[in-house]
Structures are given as C-alpha cells and as structure tokens.
Length: 133
Image (cartoon, rainbow, N blue to C red; front, side, top):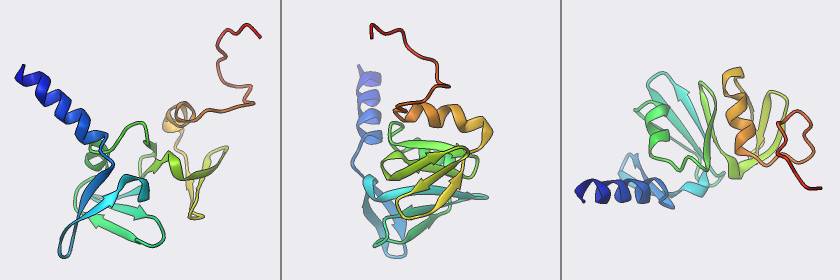
C-alpha cells in the first residue's frame, strides 16, 4: 500500500503543470509550458524559457532535470538537448526549429525517439500500421 502511494505521488509530480526552479532569491514557480528546451553544459543545465522569461541555469545534469519533467512533453534529441514538443515549429532532416527561432541538431542515436514523439502525416519511411483504407 505504501509503495502504491509513493508511485501515485511520483506520477502526479512528473505530470505536474509547474516546476520550481532555483533562482537567486529562492525557488521560482515556472509553468512547464514555458520551458522551450534544455541544454546540457557539463554538469549544468540551461533551461530556456519563453521569451519573456529568459533562461535559468541549474547546477545539476540535464538527465536529472529530465527525470522530473513529463516524458510525453519532453524528448531528448541530442546528448546536449531536450525539447518541449509543444514548442516545435519545424522538423526537417537532422534539425528541429523551436518557436523562438532556435534551430537544434538531432543526434543520430535520438532520431527514432524524435520521430516517435510526433504524429508525422505523409511520411513514407515510417513503419505503417495495417489499415482498412
């Protein structure tokens, strides 16, 4: 019973609409929808936010930040980048363009994860499901 409560709490935490990011004056509440992408820089993680909010830096690795974010929204696309799929405006070849104009490269080993994160209509390369069309 205790493990079930712990699991439910963990799921609620990951699917939360807000996170608190450490700033100079304490922890600042940020909507997960304002997070555009994450950038790894050694043992630091830059959290790039919507234009009005700038970016925040936290002194923990990006992989640890990702553990606390909704895996349905945040996808790792490169060893140095993870994106919020709500902010993607273009996906072409090995590049993703975010709605703030930033273009990020997709690492070869992350390509499959990226394709699985989006509904790709008109793609001929994807494995097709059997259909009755």
